[in-house]
Length: 437
Image (cartoon, rainbow, N blue to C red; front, side, top):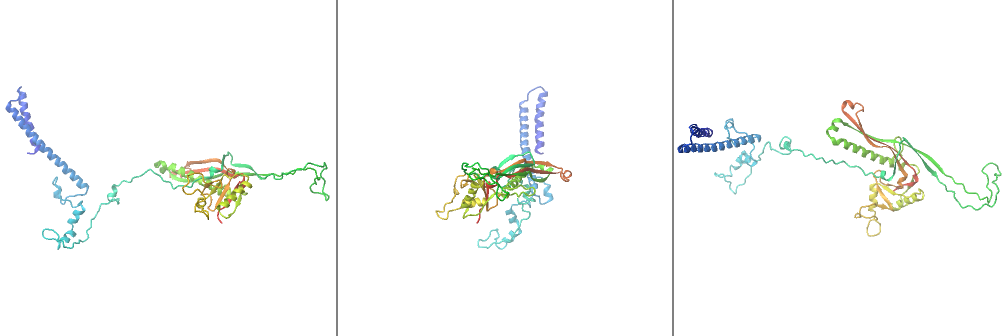
C-alpha cells in the first residue's frame, strides 16, 4: 500500500473511533484514546513519506524540464519512459568530459598507460586534435547571441558644424519689403581752405576768347566751392532654402526625428547665410558679400603678418574714416598668428601663449574673430557695423505633402527657408588683407 493510501486508512480508523463515541453520547475510553492516537501516528508517518516522495517527483520533473531545455536527451526511448531516471546525457557535457570520453583521448592512452590507468612519468604524451561541434557562442545570432539584447542609448551625437560669428559682428535690421534702398556717399567735401578778406567789389569778367567760365576778380574774397556726391543703392531680398523628404511613418515612429531635421535645416541655412555675407558674388539669387563689394580696400603682403595687418588697420582709419572693430581670420591663419615667434629672443610667442587665460584675443588692439567662411590666406579688417543684413523672413520650417506625388506615397517635404537682403553701406570701411607672401 502506498503512502497516500496508508494516510487515508489511518485517518479513517481514527475518525471512526471518535464518531462511535460521539454517537453514543460519551467520551473516549482509555483504550479508544490509545487506539486513536496510534492511528494518528500512523497517519503522520505516512504523510511525511508521501511529502518526501512528492518533493522527489517535483525535483525530477524540474530536472527533466531543465534537461530538455538544454538539449540533454536520454540515450534510449525505454529510459525516457521511466519517470525520474536519466541516462547520462550525450549532449551538454562539459568540455573536459567530452575530451575524456573522446576516441582521441582513449587512443592517446594506449601504449602510455599502465593496466591501472596511470601514465608513466617518462612517457611522451600527445593526442590527436579533437573538435566539439555546435559550440554555443555569444557572438552568433543562431547561438547564444540570440539571447543578447542590444542596449540602445538615447544619446545622439551630431556631426558638428562650424562656429558662426559674422551675424554677431554686422548690423542686423528688419524689412517688410522685397527691395531695400539706401543712399551711399561717394564723394565728400574736401575743398575747405582759408580765405582772405575781399579787397575789391569788381564783378567777375568774361574770358577774352569768349565762352568758358567767368574769371573772378583778383582780391574778390571768393570762397572755395565744395563738391559732394551720393548714389542710391538697391538690394533685393533673396531666398536661402533647403528641403528634406521624409515618410510620415518615420516622423510618427521616431518622435525626435522631426526636431533633429528642423535643427539641421536651420543650422545649414545659417552656414550658407554666413558664406553669402562674406563671399556672395551678387549674381542670380546670391547676395553680394563684403569681399565682392566694389570699393573695399586691399592690403598686400608686407614683410610679415603683423606689419601687413597693421597697415590694413591704418587704411581703415585714414581712408575708411572708421575705427576697425575686428579682424576676421580663417582658423589656420589664426593659428599662424598664435604660433608666431620672434626671430630674435628666447623663443617666446608674440601672443599670450598656450597657457594664457581664456579671453578676447587681439592683434594691434583689434579682436580676432575666426570663421571658416573666409579662405585661408585672406583676412578682413574693418568696422563690421557698416555691413547690414535685412531680415525679411527669419528662418522658418514648414511641412507639406503637396509635392509631386508625395500625397499618395505618404511622403512629406520638410522645407527650411529664410529671406534676407544684404549690403555694405561704407565699402572703404573694410580692407581685404593678403596674409601670404
